[in-house]
Length: 118
Image 1 (cartoon, rainbow, N blue to C red):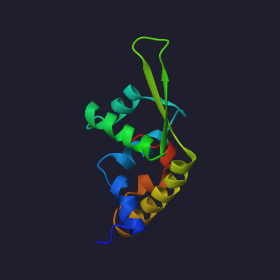
Image 2: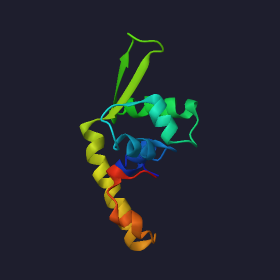
Image 3: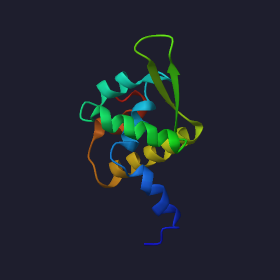
Image 4: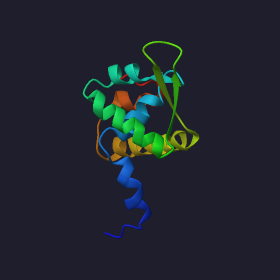
């Protein structure tokens, strides 16, 4: 595989388990979301993996982090960057492709992902 290929290089960080799902979660609800809120909405992910993925997504410029040290415990919050908001339109296009060709899910096809509770 040609490691200079744009698709290959992009998939190096987007294909890591949970990466897209974390971005999807951050695209819902409040603009800033606390670590604990992300974790409670994604029950299967471990705190260690969530912290690692959030760090990687921040390093890639896909999310922003702010830390409030005025309270205890320290409060970390995350939100999408402009880059990842644009990426989420691509994810929505993937959803529409899957609904057309691979997955029969009428309820999902009628729902805006921003309001999805699944």
